[in-house]
View 1 (cartoon, rainbow, N blue to C red):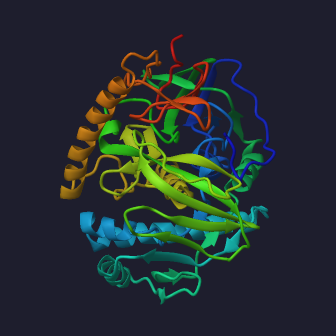
View 2 (view 1 turned 90 degrees about the horizontal axis):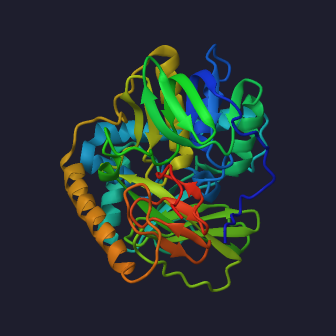
Length: 427
């Protein structure tokens, strides 16, 4: 069932009809790409954005829509991998992003159900929870203890928010549409470089000076070795009828539970897992459910910035895309406009011991997932993913074909829904 609680009537944009020459090309029409276009739309640059499906129709449509810097135990993991200085900087960037988003909403009178919402992290593991509290103090986070809505050990902060992500994205698209050329159903197929970038799409060619990939999972393997430095995590979100209890929460235990409320409904995220693992969700009295994919980096920091001169990526948000989309858009727009360099989240950074260990685990996982996909298809006529040739699995919930290795998704008749694959299934 391809359905989300955020589904509303959306603005429509045409597809590419001819070859294009532009200054800046943004690939990906989710919250990151649209926010970046918003920051660039009043500059002297000619800006073009392409989206392979419809704007906001990918990960942005499947999120829980939280604006928080209390992101489960992520700050603790960053501290362990990189030290307190980097963890503080990450936390401060999240706080700045919340402030920026609220200002955009207020300055443009965007109606997107923005609500102040206490963020709670909770745990059934007292020893680990004690470490988390100590880390929050080291990061100068003034938290409160024991929110009355949660029975487990918990801390919370009040200066966080929730909103309707698609109302926000669609509003930004309407604001910029006279200054930015937006094309839907226009899919990038390949990138070549002469003096400028030449992007081949399913509908023609686009020449640009700056190329920014905001499409969640870049299509290339080299030079960045993206499949090794990241892995994809799939989660299930269930929707229940419930009164709005005016908080959002996430645990720090092994099996993730994330909660937020929207009007008279509760969003309950659980069953976060690798792509080759099956869902174990009990339907109960849910209204319906959907699935989301998140790009997880091996060192817990996002990838934001240049991978080659004038070629940028913004991805690896570790399930926290609502704030990191703004962080990425702000950093990349400033790099282009003012030539500002942001080092902390740059894609090429020193490997920490944590990332080396996790990369090794990820290589083993990729090999295992590939072999398992072949074993599962033995004696069966299953299609092959054009990206790295894993055998696809059928998703009964959505009636789609999905890659258990890197998350490409196709309709039942082989048309591409999402990458990293840029090609459709061969008949």
